[in-house]
Image 1: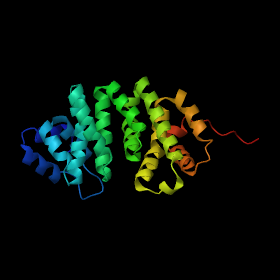
Image 2 (image 1 turned 90 degrees about the vertical axis):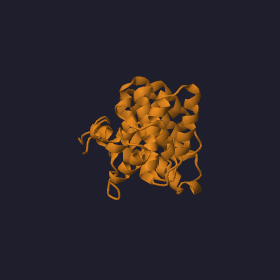
Image 3 (image 1 turned 135 degrees about the vertical axis):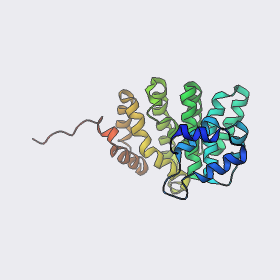
Image 4 (image 1 turned 180 degrees about the vertical axis):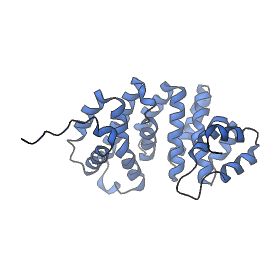
Amino acid sequence: MSTRHDFQDALKPLDASGIRDFLTAHSGLPGPRANVELIAAFGDVAPPGVILDLVSSDDEYLAACAAAALGRLVADADDERRADLLQVLHAEARDARWRVREGVAMALQRLGDSDGAVMRGVVASWAADPDPLVQRAAVAGICEPRLLKDDKTALVALDACRSATDSLARRPMSDRRNTDVRALRQGLGYCWSVAIAGDPEHGLPAFAQLETSSDSDVRWIVRENRKKARLTRLLPKPAEPL
């Protein structure tokens, strides 16, 4: 059993306890990689009550599954319920556990697949949030190639990267070693290249402006993105020596 469809079929007949046990047994942990196909399948079929019960789990994998599945609940909810669920997702974006934060990014992507306009609104709000982990969730969530085929989403992705980078550059140097700020910097170290590839017309000029920064962390972000093949293919070739 390894495909998303197989996991969906296995999860559907289980009660809450059975779902929890199945997730734990097939998590892939401890190990080098968590089972992301199972996380996706859980988000497809898990009952809302089970999802919300697992959000507060002390088990990192179970909490990550629940965070990712919140994207479906947000997409399916009416406006009032959606606001409540987005508060839960916002809190999960600040979780100290990195797999839970990855689950939040997956939730935003699932929301984007279902309702791009709502996802763009969330990302724009979160990118301006004072918490670096919330900013990180915004850029990691929207900087997904399949979402950036939509022109409006591609522009919001660039704006989110720019807003989060500007926020990082304004932080005092004494805050830069904070683990939450480092997580944001790490995310921006690849998200810019994804956003630029999604909209080179607007992204390349934005990146050129970024390259003029003297801020050490912004320069690190530039260097890291320049290593990505998706960006290298788009950047002007250096002039040949005479």
